Length: 244
Image 1: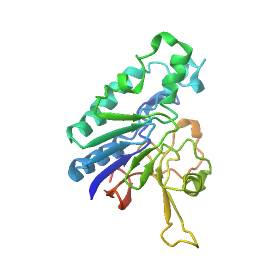
Image 2 (image 1 turned 60 degrees about the vertical axis):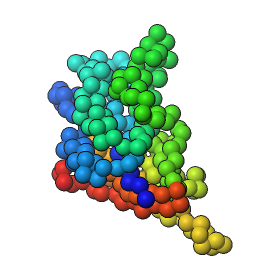
Image 3 (image 1 turned 90 degrees about the vertical axis):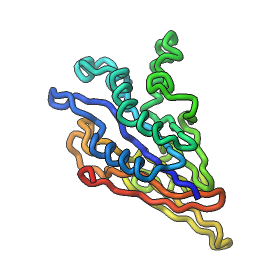
Image 4 (image 1 turned 90 degrees about the horizontal axis):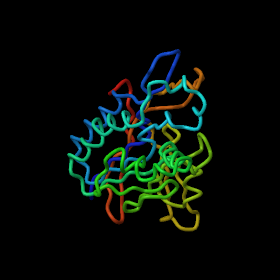
């Protein structure tokens, strides 16, 4: 069996909170996931979407210059490349996959508004992804053995997202997007071999962004790792608490 590591929802970038520039990503959480990767040495690395936050170009901040004052998309991308992308590439895994999430899709929204930017602000360009990376378009899935990886923005259900994903895809499916940990198992009363599992993988970003306005949420930090063969798999979620 080969080893894999899947990281979701880093949301590398910044926000303006009470007049201060604060990180949306959690460097402690990202660093501990990276240290795990360097020790585990996965054969397959999957970045499952919303790795770069892109909020400085989001339509949510359109017409709000004060919300993004001093923020720079390319600056965020350069920092993310140095912090995470290059160290992961240095591990020389067999495959590397980058799934486009709904935040990265804002890059395409920008190109739709300004077509002259085509080819300049896509994920591959701004993160300097080599041709060794497989980039999965938003809404599409990546398969690894019997496992299927999606970002998760195409799934509804909130706290029942793991269940919704299994029912919708009828696969052993792994997703992020919801920034929490959840699991669901579906079996068949007619065929005992028909067992499907769904896991929502926690995030690697801060758990209380300003747009939440202080409301409690179910967000948690962590990552997914495990072993996979063409016919079998065994995977685990590791929860991160205060960078450990």
